[in-house]
Image (tube, rainbow over all chains, first blue to last red):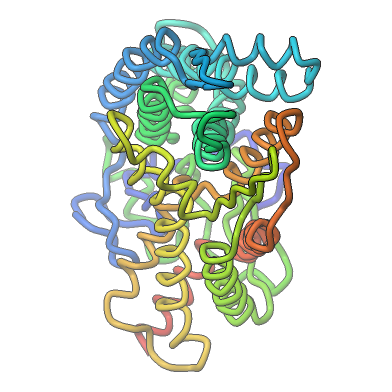
Length: 213
Length: 214
C-alpha cells in the first residue's frame, strides 16, 4: 500500500494512540467499544489472549494422551477382532507396503499435532519474552500453525469413512474406537488455542525492544 | 499511552490498520485488479475485483447445489465377496453414532456439511441484495462476521484428503467404486477455494459500509 522502501518505520495503531479493528481494519479513537463498520468488539490488544492460548493448549495436550493410548480402529476380519492405535495404524500401513499413505497419516496425526503443541507454546513464550525469537520468525511460525492445524483432522475422517464403508458383517467390518473422539477434541482445542492468539502481539515485543535501545 | 502525540493529528476515519499486525496506513482507494498488502506482515489488505460480488454469489450457489448432490448420491461403493456396500455422505457422518463415539457424529456433520452450508447461505444473504444494487439486508454485518469466523472450521478439503487415504487403506481388501457424490464433493471443494480467493475481506467491509450509508 505504502512504498516498500519506507518499511522499517512502521507506526502501529497502538503507538498512535488509536485502536484498529481486527476484522475490517477500521481505525477508531480509544474508548470506542464496538467497531462502527462491522460491530466487532474492539481492544487495542487482547490482554487475556495468552491466558486463553495456554488454557486451550493444555486441554489439547491432555486429550492427546488418551488419543494415542486407546484404539482408534477396531477391525474385525473373519470373526477376529484387532484393535489398532494411531501409531499401530501407521505401522500396519507400512507392512502393507503403502508407504505414501503411511507417511500422510503419520504426518497428520503425529508430526503435526506434536509440532503444533511445541510451536504454539514457543510462540506464547517468545511473546512473553521468555525465549528469544525475531518478530519475522514468529510471524512465519504463526502463519504455519494457522494454516496446518485443521489438516490433523484427516485421521478422524479416515476412521469415519472406513467404518461407514467396511460393514460386511462376518467377513470384514471396521468400527471406530474411543481414541477418535479424544483425537478430534485435541485437534479442536489446539485450533481454538491458535485462534485465540492475538497476532498483533507478535510484532509488539520487538517494537518495545527497539524503543528501549 | 500518550494520546496527545500524533493521535490528534491523525484522523481515524482516513486511516486503516492491518487486521493481522496493527500497522497503520492512510486509507486510499485501491484500483480494481490491484492488491494492497501490508508491508510488514504481507497480509492482503484490499483486493478489489470487477464483479467480485456476483462471482462470489454464483460460486456460493453452485457450492450449495453441489452439496445437495454430494449428500444424497452414493459417495463410495465397496464390493467384496459378491456383496455391495454403499456409503453416502450421511452414512459417513453417522459412522460414529453408536456407543461412546456418538458426540463425534455432530462434530462430523458440522465440519463437513453444516458449517460449509451456513457459510454459503450467510455470504448469499450478505452479498445478494448488494449485488443487485439494493441496500444491505438486516444484520448483514453479523452474518458476514459469522461467515468469516467459520472459515477455519469448514473442513471439506480436509475431508477429501481423508477419503483418498481411506481408499488406499481399503484398496487391498475389496473393489472400490467412486460414486457421483464423490465428484460433486471434489467440485464443491474447488468452487469453495475459488470463492475464498475472490473474497477480500476489507474491500467487502468497505463496500458494505458505503452501501449501508447511501
